[in-house]
Image (cartoon, rainbow, N blue to C red; front, side, top):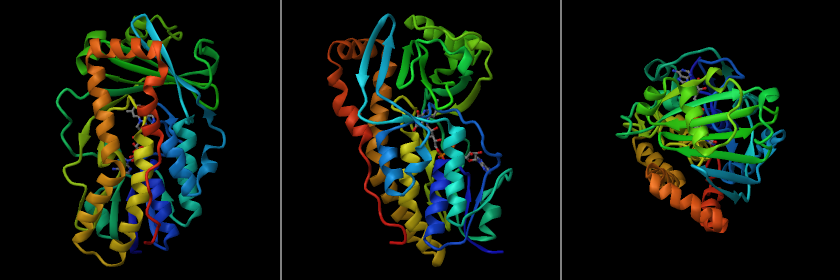
Length: 354
Ligand SMILES: Cc1cc2nc3c(=O)[nH]c(=O)nc-3n(C[C@H](O)[C@H](O)[C@H](O)COP(=O)(O)OP(=O)(O)OC[C@H]3O[C@@H](n4cnc5c(N)ncnc54)[C@H](O)[C@@H]3O)c2cc1C
């Protein structure tokens, strides 16, 4: 069978793009090498921008069981600050991604889990291919000094009471930062970004997380170092190309900036929604101008957001600036308001099929 589109990767970017293309009338095959529900190294925080995009796509119900977020607790050494959040929820990636895949299938996309795929192979049986393969599928060189990601989950019964529902805990230290949040089933999701040499010096991902938490004096969950830690490749990178003849890259496969501001899923769903109308037209009749069109739409949808995130990450690299920022926010939490509201604003979306 010849498909209008094959979407490789069923994370938020792939699932949303497949759904929108299927809703636009295309015959869509959605592939993922994993079986769902599958875990993913992620802070599991869906910000106001992502919530807005999902609402406009008619997908608010995927967040039905999510935990509403009220604030971010920041710590650097013994200093701390609490910054109120205007929006945001926490939801495990097992629940979020499975729900989005289910919505893609409901819209008519055929989903095949447990299927590893390559661009060249899929181009033979599809008019267009969407690469939504995440960070592992991003072929760009990482930025020099880029941090690596790490994640693990603490079972609900072992979570110290300190880590209350509705708060994102962000511990920053010399070798990186560790984010902790409770998800819908009471588990504590831990997601971190570390300098590679800090992990080597600490001995393991779990030991690195323990060291950062100890610097802040926050409770270290029992057996933290022995949890089932998973790592990621170097985080900050741009794909060599965003598109080529009859293919497009979207989500982390197109580009990613390290996760302190917790926006990757917002970028993924917004850019997938922006890509769908372009890919639909490209599936009907390919023209090289679609490459430029996607580059421009990608820049418009998330370019400025990724630049803000990069700026915040740079500040975090300086221990002095981080300490100053946490100290200032400890006294006047409202100082964070411009950045926080910018991060939570929804991008403008083009109508599917346009
Ligand atoms: C430490 C850390 C913390 C983060 N915290 C947050 C946060 O709190 N909030 C937030 O919004 N974002 C966060 N992010 C970012 C977020 O996880 C990603 O930006 C988001 O998952 C990107 O979605 P995606 O669909 O592009 O890729 P993914 O979610 O990675 O999905 C890619 C899919 O492609 C599949 N795949 C890969 N290769 C193939 C292949 N060859 N064939 C078939 N399938 C394939 C994979 O199995 C996977 O299911 C964090 C990231 C990290 C590393």
